[in-house]
Length: 339
Ligand SMILES: NC(=O)c1ccc[n+]([C@@H]2O[C@H](COP(=O)([O-])OP(=O)(O)OC[C@H]3O[C@@H](n4cnc5c(N)ncnc54)[C@H](OP(=O)(O)O)[C@@H]3O)[C@@H](O)[C@H]2O)c1
Image 1 (tube, rainbow, N blue to C red):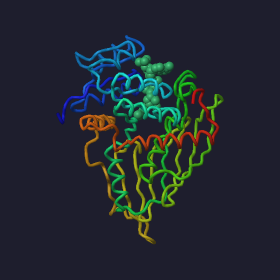
Image 2: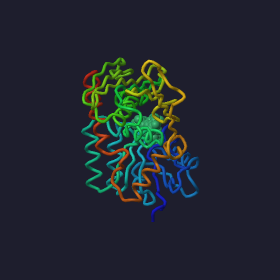
Image 3: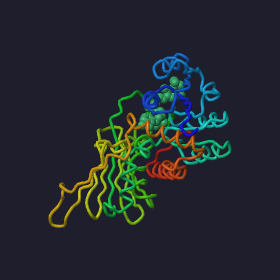
């Protein structure tokens, strides 16, 4: 039973659903059992491209979540629909992997966690970064003290969004926000490396519809470590992260949320960096596809072992980060219609 096949149902056929499906096909023991869309045409096209001869296409989300071949539903709609979609899946007896952020605000995320408990189902936020082999190895090595004590973390994620006003990236009704879409990665990275934030302060540039297009966050973490965390929808940021310790510096890239490497360069007082003694981490297990495959493999593992949450993305972490984002949104004056 330990490697039994897991039947996945993908709920929505947008951009990330397609990327996810490509990695799903690479994970041993994972099968695209069904796909659901608001449009039967989209579901059929998606199943034909990403599924096998038996993958079912559904023209409603309700038909997807009630499909008996589906054991776990991957929710890939805009944030504002996640709670309703997850609720429907739980009520149909399905486990849930839900795209990030799982909700617009903590109260809805807490309700999702409550529903998972009430129905005794697995729930995980699709924070694939936390399942990535390089991030996992870096977190373990940093915690071991091998690279010294971290005092500063920098992480930034951004790209220019060229989309119409109806796009989920810009429409407040669909949860548009640089913080929720991109800032969740630097915040989670700092949380993984330093622990829960003790204090966060933000400043932001808002669109004329009141969503944050750019945000800069300063954070204080346990042990007095500080972080500078940025997200942008208007500019091409480096997408890198760096951790400065009392013994040297760790650079993470080329994209810190799914890094190919993390390099620790020791520094000697008076002599500077010692590149000949640098340590490069590339993960202790292979990256599957773009890295979504590692997240999928983690969900499969949890389901086979009967777990209801993953130790890599525990509910408490998801709720802590959403609480931080609630607070930061309040500071910069961003509100959503229903949150
Ligand atoms: N993990 C990652 O790396 C990553 C990357 C990008 C996005 N995400 C997250 O994934 C979620 C979806 O993002 P995306 O970029 O894939 O969005 P997208 O391309 O706009 O796709 C969203 C899909 O949701 C469905 N949907 C249901 N109601 C909708 C509505 N009223 N308006 C628009 N779409 C609606 C549609 O599928 P149907 O037409 O088939 O019903 C649509 O194709 C977001 O929560 C985002 O934060 C995660």
